[in-house]
Length: 135
Image 1 (cartoon, rainbow, N blue to C red):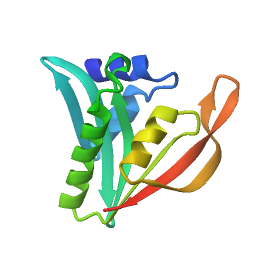
Image 2: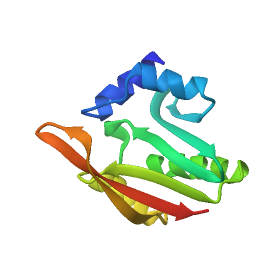
Image 3: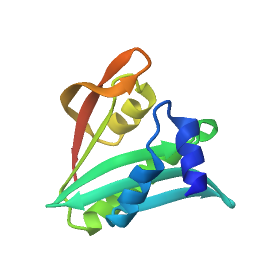
Image 4: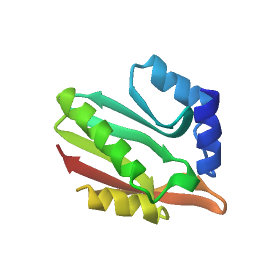
């Protein structure tokens, strides 16, 4: 948990809390890590219920981004979702997160909505883009 939380704080200006992470584990959500040797360089968390998968967190170490690791981790999560009989995957991302937006566009996600003022930001709040993909 310490390594995952250190990565979360490094990668995000407004990271999840350790309590959020532990609650996901206790709830039985699918939690995966991406390793380089003995070091965790990425993590992902997904819930699946009622044939819907929700990608809740996808994180790659900032120094390792742009190498296809996020795509690989996302594809693993989507494969797990299919195994758990999900037919649709959903996620949300900050409207300013262009790198994530490019990844999700390239992997077949489509924008389905907007949550205004959803995320905390340095100067107020930021919108969340809602995306979905048929599995």
